[in-house]
Image (cartoon, rainbow, N blue to C red; front, top):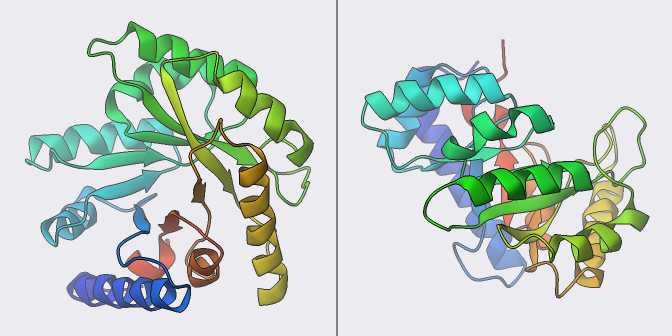
Length: 233
């Protein structure tokens, strides 16, 4: 596991790899949002990365995010942008929304409507940024809607003014070759284009083992945990 003293080195190395991938793809420097996936990581590790200037963190479980958000806010880390990237139950939306910056895993009209309803009840009149999760490999064990359902659900999002649909998200199947992973990312990119103007051209895709491939295929948000913090316990 990466030691605490090497977290800064791992962080800088990932930023360099991101910059190289953006350059290879002919993209503007800094056009990729790095989400540090802090699932199972203690608050101290998140605080250390925060001290290095990082602000975007991703969590998979509502309770874990809420606990860390309270701890880190009390420590003065009040500029964290929490991204929720795991499966979300409608009954947990109310408790999550006051703490989250973006939801990457909307996978049903029911969840879309609940997020919109709860966001509409909050003061301030802001819209909640969301991504619709696509089950890109049609895997029975994974969340996400089918590719054929993408356009209808993105169109439906226009009926909910309290959410802002940024784009699509996916997690390709495990154990694919680089060519197969690239094909999956390209498939999501083209699917997002088919969903415009209801989407905003953004793609949440790419993790520790494939984020450079994702950037080349147009990822605007990548979700990196192991390559940053080390293997989870």
